[in-house]
Image (tube, rainbow, N blue to C red; front, side, top):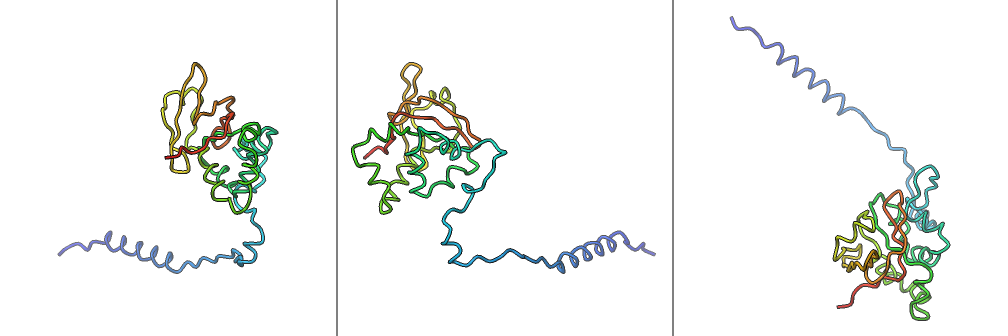
Length: 192
């Protein structure tokens, strides 16, 4: 007489009980549905607008607190790129000072801040961002950097100074989601 494989039947029963319980679980989603009018009524949504005073400040928070970067912050807001600068990163942002923006031809900044130039402004700003977190000294190892606008920019070393796209890094500030390299020029994409 053959012995009956009770362990196989037991395993099958356990599997069936688990399968049945999982299948009969009903999950309720009580998340309120947002209407399109509610979504468009408040353009300030996303990570950039969450108040978090306990974490290390992110790139946007640092820029907003800097009196030397008010033009950059205005440009980021005009291009609706706030949420980009607060993402988890790592991000490396080359942040032109107000003086760097002032050095552009007269009327350039005002023209770029107009709503009809939002895409052009966003492209220029994205040219100042790299998905990395490199110190000034580490940047000396590079000849080119890939930027967030799908272009690249040159890196030059002159003595102890590092230039990115012709802009000199004059300070570096660590942020919760990367690093800010303060630069003395607006870095424009290379024309072909």
